[in-house]
Image (cartoon, rainbow, N blue to C red):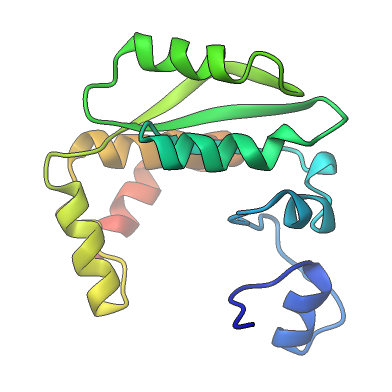
Length: 164
């Protein structure tokens, strides 16, 4: 079976050839309940639930948290065309019986407005370019950056991203 990514921190350290990870922040994209466990995300300071509102994305995301026995806190990051409160309510309804406690607030990313085209171009070029993303999308990125480390100066981050 062909596998991409890592199943735990040991896999990352082996790949990098180091004995320990000396990072303030590690972002992990998880696509299975097993990986959620092996990375010990229950002990993470901050977990995000990232989803769009198509059936596949919702179902897949809820499958990952659906088998958890222990309650976990997560913040919602929602990709949506219209960013309606009804979409948020729908996710609350679908996740009602799951072991999840939603943190206050949520971060919305617009799903259209050209951002999708920028994503495709970035994938094709194997790079990340921020210049052509909408301001709403960039604001979502800045909100996440500030939540991860509220000591970060968002204006400095904005200056850095202007070069990309």
